[in-house]
Image (cartoon, rainbow, N blue to C red; front, side):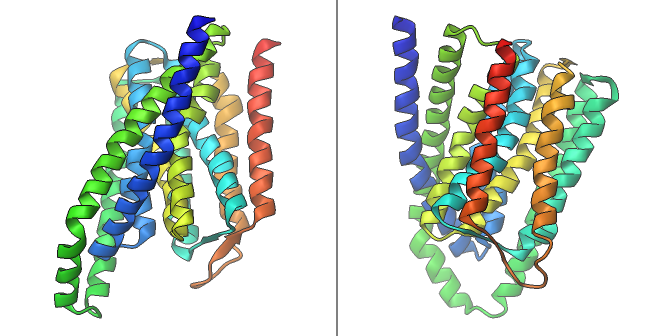
Length: 329
């Protein structure tokens, strides 16, 4: 009983710190976008996505190092499912999300290709080897390079229509504050996520839940809370592109970087049930999202309405219920 109270206290403190730090972090990320002339979507795909995916990387690396590949792989797949259902669902319930054409026609297809690439590697022999991990990490490096390259190209085009003196003045005005918000928010965000996951895993272990189920549910949801908190903060500030870019970018980091780290740190076999049951659901959610938004063309944005957000949130709870109750049957 004392352990349960102790772990529950860690969860509550972690949630409180998470809410505080995410607000500061999004302020800093938004400032970076404005001062460097980079779109909020690109910031969401890179800086925000990397920082909010860091808990998944840390937890999965530690789990793989200790030989618990069930937690590690379940964390990566489960976090993406939580991002597409819980994070997008709650975000759309708060404010209908306007998804820009760049996300619809470029970023989402990249995520689908990354998931198919990772699936081919995982399904080949049901072993996540060190070579597999290196291939996945190489793909992640390429995606980051491509994103930065396109961002620099976009920034170069914008500079032609902006007064250089005005740009320099803006940078001098916001750079110190932006860096402080970004660094302090990021540090507390990661620390609070770690505390939250540690407490949640402790609660799950008290009730005797298996490692695989912990990875797919408690750990996956816990490590997705930074994405949720950052996306909600971005939405409140009107940064819809940053919120959606955070989800897509986190999906890329989870499927390429997290699984890559697992393969490099702790190459091992894994439970094939994840590939048969959970991975197809993750992939289907992204594909359906892409197909559903393909109706938009040109510079037109697609709006994720509140009823869609409610449906995604309901799907999240149904999936969690199937995983949890199915594990006890």
